[in-house]
Structure formats: structure tokens, C-alpha cells
Length: 112
Length: 116
Image (cartoon, rainbow over all chains, first blue to last red; front, top):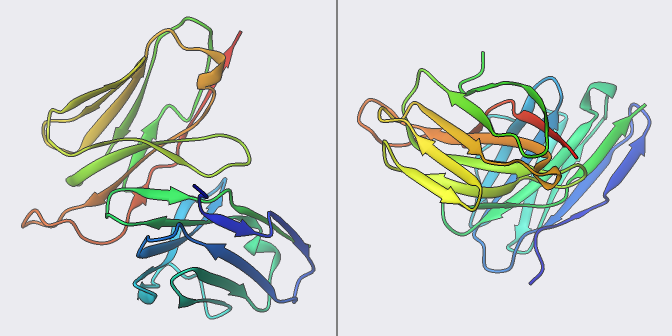
């Protein structure tokens, strides 16, 4: 069975550009999570959706970040405009039951 | 300030040695989880402990949840190079009524390197 799919795996962009990260959750899962991982701050939850509805976006750093989940099989995380401090690995995870989240391979974002 | 404090941050040992990683908090958790993450991949759930005092074993890995549900430990017996990776603890904190709330909170992680 396919796990969580993220694209792209690597993204290098220049400061000020728009970045869109994509995620396809595991089929049948009803919750989707976006995380950011850095050496300084570890793994942080940015936002999560339940049944395609955003439930908690308190972890989104600022208005430059936005996330959507138009249907049960697709979600995007957009950064506009991007800044060097946004450089990190961004993970998407999905779950069916509360305690078990399955993570994707991540997108390594570098903002120059 | 981290809600979950892991120690040590780094651990470098020889194959065959035993090790213990700790995850501590001043808060009570409804459950605690342990994940392992390899370079270039996402974290993979190893175990969930939900009852105070619970001990779970997964081959050479032993996980324990503290009686007060504020701490957990991961013990690896006879470590192998394949155990190398980042180990993360995570949990949902509970309120005074014992109901879990908020989001899954992660510790900073322990980077384990096992040398052949």
C-alpha cells in the first residue's frame, strides 16, 4: 500500500518567491497534519485537518503560510513570500485514529 | 521551554552495548509515543504506551511509561548499527480533568549512532 506521498522532495528557491508543497494522505485516513522540522526547534505541528476542515492552525508561523485541503486525497502548504528562515524539512502525516500518525518522506526546503 | 525533554541529545556507542533514552515532563500525558527517524525519511511510530507503569517490548527495545504518566524511557539491548537514527518521544498532554487536549507534542530527539 502507498504511504503518504509528498512532493517535491527537495525545493530550492530564492527569497520572496512563492513555494507550494503538496501532500497525498493515505487513502481512507481522515486527519492530515503538516509539520516543520529544524535543528533548532525540532518537529513542530503547523496545522491539522480533520475531514478536510482545518481544526488547529495555531502553529502556523505567520500570515505568509497558508494550507488547504480541497478534498480527502490532497493538501497543499503554501509560503508566500518565502524567507531564508523558512528553510526546513516539511512533513505531512495522516491518521485514521488519534494515536497513530503516518509520516511522509518530507520536503527539504531551502530558501536562498 | 520544551514540554517534553529528552536526554541525552546525542549518544554514540559501540555495537553490542546497551543504552537508555529518557523522555521527561512536568506535565501529565494521556499517552506517550516513541518514533524512530532515519536520514531523509519521516518519523516512524515504534510504540504507544497509554497506562502508567506500562512496559512494552519490541524485540531488543523496551519501552516504559512512568507511573505518574509524566515520563518514559526507551532501552535498547545489544545495540546494532541498524539502530542508528533519531529517536523522538511524543505525547498528548492532559488537563486537570485527565482529558487529553491540544496537539501531539514532540521532544527534541536523541541522535543515536551505533558503530560496528
